[in-house]
Length: 194
Ligand code: G4P
Ligand code: NA
Ligand code: NA
Image 1: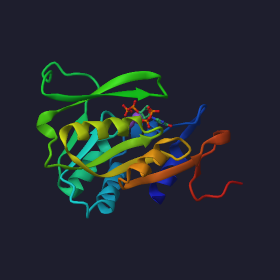
Image 2: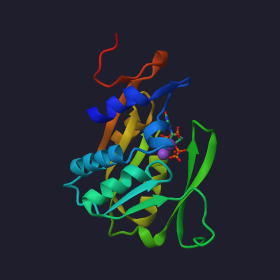
Image 3: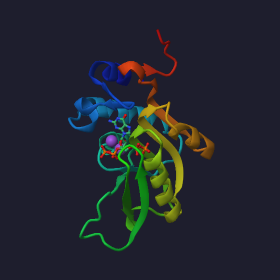
C-alpha cells in the first residue's frame, strides 16, 4: 500500500537489530486518518470472506482493527495481556513468547466473545516471527472459531512469521512488506536495492 510505504519512508526510524520504530503514527502517537485508510484497505481485501468478528491483541493492533471493523460492520475484540480483576474465569488463555523482548506473556480472551459461530479476521500491527498471531490462532482453536484471514499492517518479510503462516493455508495480507532493514535503510519487497 503506497500510502503506508510513504509514511514509513517519511517517519519510520530503523533501529539496530532489524527493528523499525514507527512511534510517530502507529505505536505511540496514532494518526487516525491513516488508521482509517488502513482499516478500509483491510475491509476491501477481506470483504468476501464472511468475517463476523475481528480479533487483535492490545495495544497497537487495536487502532487499525477498529477502523476495519467499522468498515466491515463487525465487532472488534482484543486479546488482553494482563488479566483484568473483573475477568478472572471464563477465559481462553495462551502463552506468547516474544523473541524481541525475550519474555513470555499470557494473552486472554473471554469465552463470551469468541465462539464456534465466528469467522474471525486476525489483525496486528507487526508481523515478525509471528508469535502473537500464533497465540491468536491458538485462542481461536480453543473457542472452535474459524479463522478466515490474517491482516498485518507492517510485515518484516525477512523474519520467520510470513512463511509459517503461508504453510497454514490461511489467507494473509500485509499492507507493507519490508524485505530488509540492513544499513539502517528500509527496502520494501519488490523494490530494487541500490
Ligand atoms: P511476533 O509476534 O511477530 O513474534 O513479534 P515479536 O514477539 O518479535 O515482537 C514483540 C512485539 O514487538 C510486538 O508488539 C510486535 O508487534 C513488536 N515488533 C516486532 N518487530 C517490530 C519492529 O520492527 N518494530 C516495531 N515497532 N514493533 C515490532 P507488542 O509487544 O505486542 O506491543 P504493542 O502491540 O503493545 O505495541
Ligand atoms: Na507493537
Ligand atoms: Na502488536
